[in-house]
Length: 91
Image (cartoon, rainbow, N blue to C red; front, side):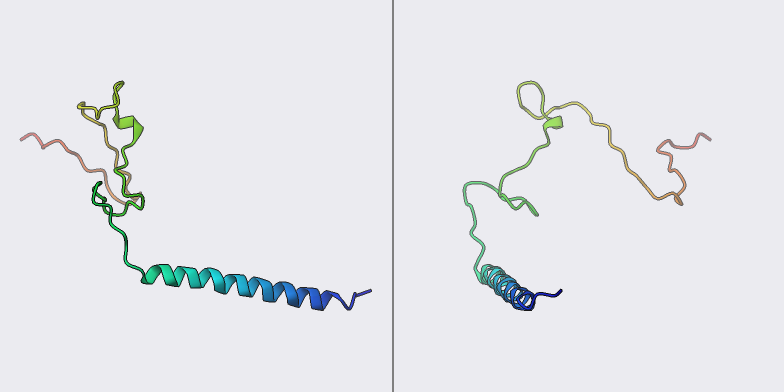
């Protein structure tokens, strides 16, 4: 029932995939050793891989400029933390 050609095909596929894996890892190791090219025209922000300044569309007004209005921020905390009041207690 088992075809004798199956182990040969399985072994060949394994070797091809192993060879591909080493090729890809070799490119990654080679890229890690090269110096990072800087872009002097645009300021690169910390952690931004593109080198472009990223602005969320929600922060732009109708003309495409940053809004000047106050924004509501929400901080999610753990369930164990008691809620913290921003108001000062009245004495």
